[in-house]
Length: 243
Image (cartoon, rainbow, N blue to C red; front, side, top):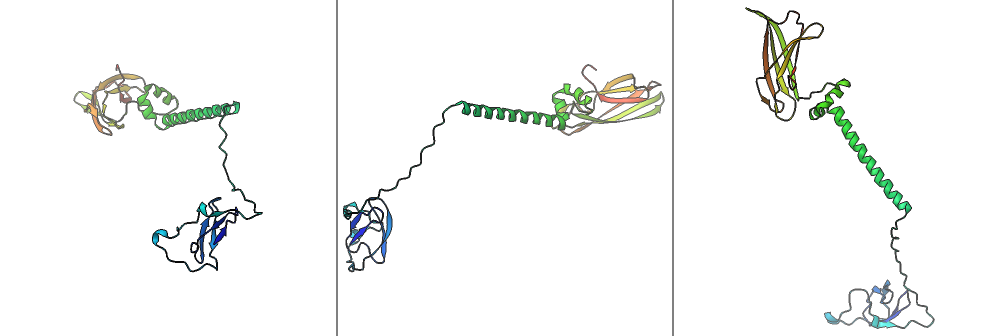
């Protein structure tokens, strides 16, 4: 049986029984074209052969069975498609400007991210900033924002009493650690002021606890016997260094 490649017109001589009804896929050994070859009507019934001598199950590609092309046929070249490699990146003025612009943009974005983070920290965590940088307390005061540089909060009450010696000012209060770490409790400063806000007398007392853990509360108390006659107000705060 002779079959012909429909692409390059190469002819093959096949033994009987290689292409059995209704046909099979074959492939040209020259141009690798694959097509379905129908079995010829004149083919005799195939003779069984041992397993090792049976025809291969895949396409027929035996070059030894190739026949010369018929006279007048024009062999068709096998089309080849190649993807050209990308052109190499060559440095130039445009490429340098592009890289410089990209680096500048990345630097600007980094600076903006840092500035945004600092502004958010200053505005939304004033106590944390003031505790890490006590000098910023004056800036917050100028902006009308109360800050806690010590990490503690004082809640105090005072009453005036009379005992055998005369009038007595009694002060009781709580000290609250508002941070997430253990802190040493500073001294408490008490000051008596007159109607004009002028300080008349002050003294310091120690809290009942020397240290407070995270979110822990402590207490303090004080008494002032025979306060000045013009005393009108009492200020309670933590003592600064040297007071």
